[in-house]
Length: 278
Length: 250
Image (tube, rainbow over all chains, first blue to last red; front, side, top):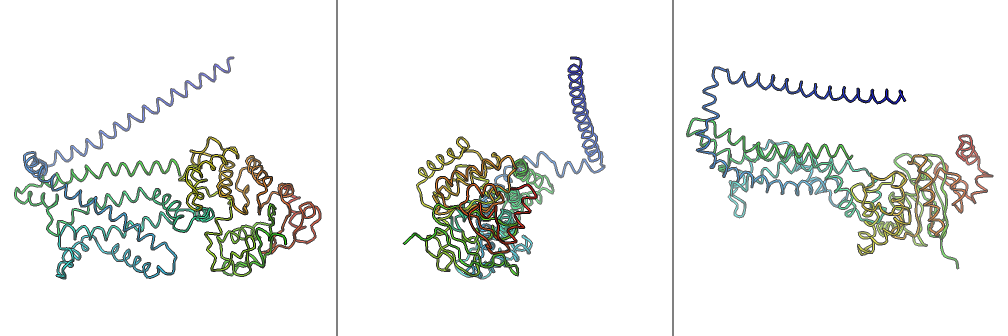
């Protein structure tokens, strides 16, 4: 009897200790946050140049004057990166499938796909935008695109499809070969095995890195300004040239954060879910 | 004239690079027969079964299914695999599909059975193997024994001419071996033609009509279970069984 009482006491003591530890942890986290963030804020706010920085980067009058124009220009960025992402996901998958195929008849395609990945992954996006955006119209060949938005989109798609192809390829390679054996053993063709067994598993595994590349693409979409496209960054740049004030650029940064941060959280969540169920 | 064996393997050789795994294996399996394939790890049991299902290409020899050569380059391996069933040591269930979809995929995609009909048969088979109520679960929600029984159901769902069982209990915890063996026993009593690669000698004795001993890439001794296990004639067979006996595995 007294023994069970003692066990009950120990249980209560353990619970109390656990609660105490949790409370102490929260307090330490809160205190260190205040110290670090407060210290940073104090450092910035007490800098001798802070009043002029506040005026040049965080001017509310400039912000309200230009924000709606920047926002509507940002809508063009959104359209560009969404359309390009769809194209990238398709081309990347095709490239990956060609590269992982072993059919001798596909050898020339395999060579092309390997070349595509090597070349376009090896050139900075900004250079590809120059080369494609100014090079293709310079050919003056009727039928070739001349629209700078389209050309910029092509350059982005070409570059990102090379990255995404490698992500897919890693995913396909990560599916255990026993899965292919089992798929063939139940009488599926190679293509059916790929479609119903290998790819669903591969794509699920690489969803976080694919989203990661999508976040990178969203930011690089601004580079089409080089071709004279009036997207958000370019509009903000013009505005800050007019006012000698950088607030419009901060506004663009906020718009980018508004789309990339939720996506980053989604990537985190997918990663956690994958850890939970391997 | 009697019917040809369901599966007839003749003089099959297979090398992986320099290593010759099969050195002229011959084995015939008649209708409703169960042949137990025994032998040390690395003796070529798995490779032989993989060759029979055309998952590996043989180097030389021939394999016949119902009297028809299946190892000719002109034969479509997909059509042959649709007439055979394989159960793998590591289950190889499709982790992204439910239990029922694992069972139905082959019938609906490979055999062209209507989805509803395939599901009906799938449910019926799952229930028969003690898996009723688990249709919507994912494989990782099942125990190893349950997973292997799903794999067995998946393999027989399309009524194969012969079932190839590749050490189906080797990856299981000891307490789960029994339920899988009893599933195989049920198949035998239904007259399913089987090749059973196994390390379970008592099971081989009970279920198999004959035992074939694979040593160093060739079948060096074959006969009724009682005879092979009680009175092995080849020295390698004697040594192999002696080792198992010493380890308390017979």
